[in-house]
Length: 250
Image (cartoon, rainbow, N blue to C red; front, side, top):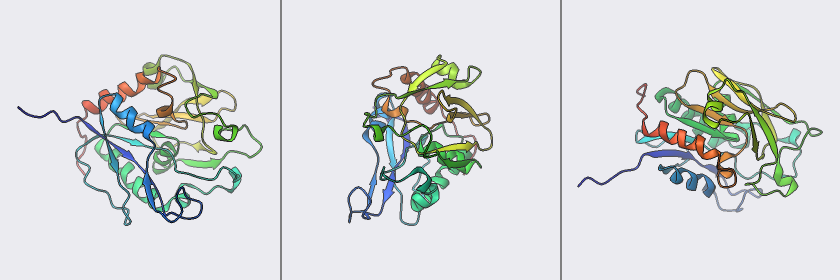
C-alpha cells in the first residue's frame, strides 16, 4: 500500500542575529508564529518551514504546492513610524531570501499569499512602494493598545468586482492590524481589493495575471478562530494548492 503524502506548502520564517533588540539576545533565531502552522494543517496541507541560510540561497522547493509569506519579526513598539527602516534594511538576510522566493513562486505559478510584511514583500518585488503611516494618523498597530491579535479592530471595504469578494461573499470585513507602514503604490498586475474604512489605506490586493496571488496588510492567520469567515479563503487556497500544476520550469 502506498503511503499518503499530504501536499506541502512553504512557510517563510523570520531571521534575527540575536542582537540586543531581538527576542533572545545572544541567540540567533529562525522562527515563525504557530498560528500559521496550525492554520495550514487545519485546511489539509502540511507546512514546510523554509530556512534562511547565511548566504540567502534557497533549499530545494520542487515539492511545494504553495507559498505563505509571513509577517515581520519582532520590532520594538516604542519607535516612531517615521523612524522605521524599509523592508531591506529591517532584515537584509530575510529580504534577499524572500525576494528570491517571490521570484521563484511567480515563475512557477505557485499559489501565493502574503500577510503584512509578506504582502509588502511581494508588492515590492513586483515594483510597488512602501511608506510609513504618519505618526499623527490613525493607529494601525493594536499591540500599542494592548488588544489581543485574534480580535479585529477596524473594518475593511471589499471591492465587489474582485475575486476576493467572490470567495468571501462580504463587502465589509472586520480585521486586526499590526502595521506601521503601508503600501502606497501597488506593483505590476496587482489590484487593490480591500481598503481600510477609516483612512482608505490598501489592506488587500490580488493579481490580475497570476493564478492565485493575494496579499493582506493585516493577519488573517490570527483571525480564523474568532472570525470563521476566513476559512472560506484558506479553503480556497488549499484547493488551489491541491490542484497546482507548474506553469513554468525554473
